[in-house]
Length: 356
Image: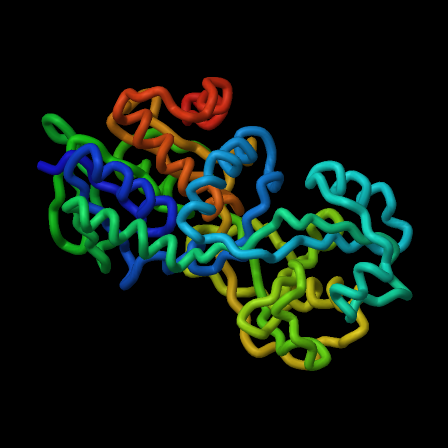
């Protein structure tokens, strides 16, 4: 019998498994062929401390030292783009994100495709940075293996049974046993809980679509900031010489291997086109991921109040990559009985007990 079984090999599960491997034996089960296949591999990969609310921001700030010390961050910047007549929404977003306003000429010097006929307001945050998500995921996996942990891919979970002293998990036709079970199954976390006979947390997966465009107008986009429409109605981010554009959709869906909705994507690209001078003439590829939320939009981290050896690591929403270092540390601290770095108010706000 192992000390821990972690189900889900995205960033949340892999980071939690790496932390827990310092406390005991760990097996990480992932249903796909590789780690980070679903939401973790389809992230905008941006770190902005003020993105989110309440305890999410606390997690962001607690993650910052780890991200910086390990060299996962690189300069990017975030530019807010508001249409003429949208002063109220623009002001609200500037205040929430702690941004500095820009004159349009200054903004166009950074991003020359901004349309002076339609753009009325711009602001900038120099604190936003890119995250090297792939390297961080692989580093957590290496740390897990170095501590004696085991990673099993192609292992979809089909049954979970309560046994004396812990849990038995059937996955990929094999049986695994552990004293503690960690649910990091992303969009499937409530389904996994049902297999274990644990009450659901009301998780709702929501689709987020993305289009990859050629660099608009042949510009070198590598030094451009990420662009964000007021009210997060669209965003665009440089990526390997191309531009990723998202309608920032959040449509409720069932857990599945997500794909972009063509109509939703077209509407988002139209909102982006309104703010720029270069039309979208070609979409090179598109994809989608699932961002999963509970009712209050805050992550769910810690022991289930009715089954303390069932640990939730779920509800990451759009914040899972940048919160992973601190979220995984919180789980390890709670399991080990250590005082968390986060204050007690934040820990309570993240606990699954709030959802019962």
